[in-house]
Length: 97
Image (cartoon, rainbow, N blue to C red; front, side, top):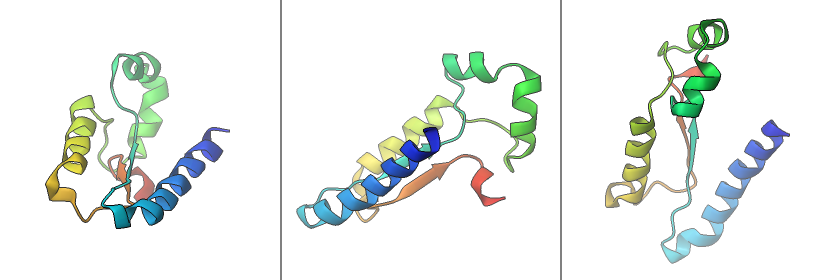
């Protein structure tokens, strides 16, 4: 169910982009790794759980909330006017290996 819902949101992002771009509406998806919010720290804190995931990630770490916030600010700014329909991976290279 988790993977199917993610796939559905990614497809919805692309569809909404196709429908709304002509009206100057941008639709993008931020696709993060584990982010070390209080809940993320609680769930992924134990080394026996986090170590294999971190070892499989080229950046060798999880994300911080400010990194996702910075990406959201970029996407909300005029600097990203031409970014539309993007699935922006912010996951330390995990999906590249």
